[in-house]
Image (cartoon, rainbow, N blue to C red; front, side, top):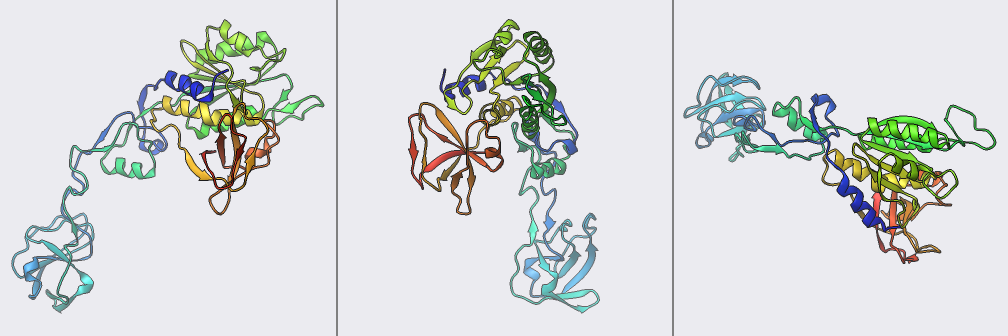
Length: 391
């Protein structure tokens, strides 16, 4: 049995970035850039008016100004502005040569059909200078960026309609246990519905990976062996839930080894989730998670999800929130690192949710964080800062 930090480092250090692919911009949200993106133009591409008004010379603000033309957004000026002249201009239009400011339309008045005057004493320039945001050839988004809507706007603005992104890993999900039935079936007296498999499918989707559901695998060595062979051959990562503890039917680690999976750890000094397996195959990686639903949920969040993020090219794998505890917390045993389901109250404090153990599925339904309790710590006082991860 190894400590969580060691297990985490072992797994993360084995994760390999996948190949990259070009995708359409409409599909790029929440994907990770696999190359730097350069601007193909200055931004803004010209001196651009920030207001509706009149482009003129600052030196002429006290004079009556002849209106030369109207410049709409998307149209080029046809005339340069000389002394005692101006051009009416719309927001976003190119400022004509000769002008060094734009006076706002509400600060002017017409003296005749083609003559205006400025009613105030001072004006800001009211235009954006060419390339003040980005110059042609500048890096606008760096490799490893997780693409969000604001990045989509940048990609669109510089003409990157097919960004190069890391591929999404295929994740085989196997739920083991002859006692399991699928959600659309009625559970018999000795059966339960398969919650882990569908929970892991959802977590995989939320992590932006591609789940491949293998269904329920019965407590048979032959059936387990066939499923594992196929899963390893066809997927980047295999996640099994159940069959990794010490029971008579917990033979998953044995079968993994028979299929040339090198097991790098089989137990973590953690609660919940001690019987967690991680192994490496020539073509894929394998996680064996405990059968209890809270254990499998939390281990996916704190171990598997960062692993998948690294495969998809992300560098920032974990976000830790340092938050105050809203009540005193205590536990009976401190021989393992603990992950405690919790909810944030209106004061920004974490309150542990009612938790009956790793089979208490409803405890995580009412939680939005898990916080860690270090090995050897039995009590944490109200107001103390804990390290939490959002779930």
